[in-house]
Length: 92
Image (tube, rainbow, N blue to C red):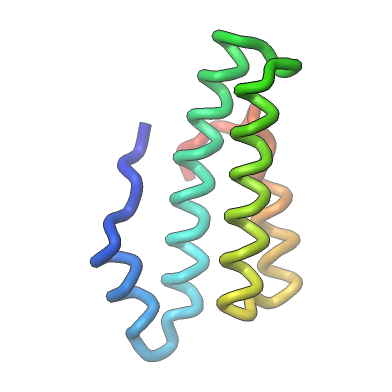
């Protein structure tokens, strides 16, 4: 599983001029991490489990919160959403 980005990495990438691409990459990396965890949860407890539903809600909340906070373009949102399937390969 890929490591979750540190607070310093998040702060640095958001502070740089023209960092929208870096922010999108950070969000995508975090979603990859969550997606990998969702896949593990699905294998262990199943897609109908409380654990899986809770993890899915966290993933969606993170996406909503961070995309709004960074005013991400709708085209970029659509691209990220297309990559959100649990069955996706987590390597990009």
